[in-house]
Image 1 (spheres, rainbow, N blue to C red):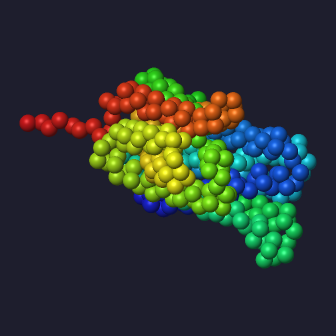
Image 2 (image 1 turned 30 degrees about the vertical axis):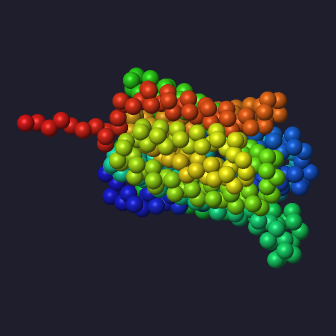
Image 3 (image 1 turned 135 degrees about the horizontal axis):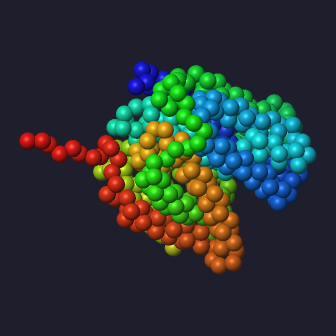
Length: 412
């Protein structure tokens, strides 16, 4: 057992907070900056897609090789490579080079941290404490991530602040911010460098072979979970912050500043809900917490298009956001509980990769449905997909308990 679990967990949580701060910042300023340097909407999308493709490829490589080359080494390497993205934006090369560097640097323009490092953190954290603490530790980790993302989004005003306070040209102000983002990546790498050998498989004594070895019974469980998570992520792709903000803007004519406050409140509720999820899971179980918080959140969402006013729509939306993230630490904990310690890297990599792919697919379909079917289609279809996911998950896994929920019969 790790003699200093709090130290390693503290380092991972701090690194996740700083990385998510950078992702939250990029989610707001990246597209605007690319527009300001003269890129069209098509090429802005191309650069963002290049970064997400790089992140997806990194997640695949992480799943297959992290336990062979070492989790700590890979976390440090991913953070160092991430600094390339900020440097690329600061130097503003021509489009082909910028897209290549965005791919290499895994630039994330979604505003949500779903990186290879994020997936690897989920494999490391369960091994740093007992099963009884696993869900709580993952809840704290997600609390730090959402907190960092919220503050990063608020920091999107830094370029304008630098322009007014330091009398810098606007593009120069953006480039200072991007260099700061690269510095943030280097700081994260330095934090990961301080991790103990306990983050590795078998407490660092040996590294597992390159080939991922998954027990046959766990393969079937992992495949079913991955399929269900893909359905959930497909529904989530209809409900990205950008699309929902656009819906509020078009439906009620709400200005960007007011929407910014709404989504700051959203992220605060998301962050707080992780701690509530850990408490509920201890008393009612992981699967029950996942389903019976997620299901009503989808119903709240599907009611939003029928709200008679902006205030009612926001109220229903915030009710949804207070519940919807409760399945995040519980889902991560449940996956970790069903596979062996040496299988966790592969399991978290595969499930996160599937979620990212179907999230992207859902986002693309949502835009077409808004244009060609009905403007509120994403809220209704996305919510419906998530309701279906909840019902299928409960039907398939309600009897499969994690170790901490299995009671041993008394011997008389």
